[in-house]
Length: 178
Image 1 (tube, rainbow, N blue to C red):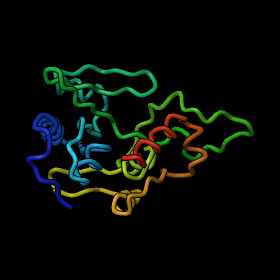
Image 2: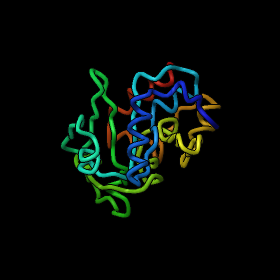
Image 3: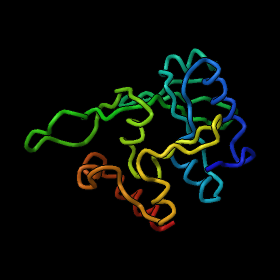
């Protein structure tokens, strides 16, 4: 499924192309992909990449690294920011929960693959990646089917996902209302 090139922000495309030229994987991700597929204009364009925050900073002099829980690169084009994150994996993957253990994620600097990054996102409709080189959507979590069905579904167990980050409940209501 291709997205018309003219709908993609020119600065986001510049970031993607530079990352690709330097041998990094890089995709549009999340809400911008969802909105473009729904025929809406995204409020912003986010990128996920195999490049680490420091590698991103080395490639873009208009970049500032932010965040404690998870380090992100903000690439500035005037007042516009292209948020660029390194692929993440679930910091709890493979580690069983102890009885009564808190699920709230406080540390999330565990880098991963494209698929791992998709699986740790909140909702299937936000776990979509768009590859501008191949002009195709990468869907590891069933987001395309849920988008077609107008379904808001968490990735993984909803009870656990909402306990990890209670704000997700509000986001689910917002997406369902829209």
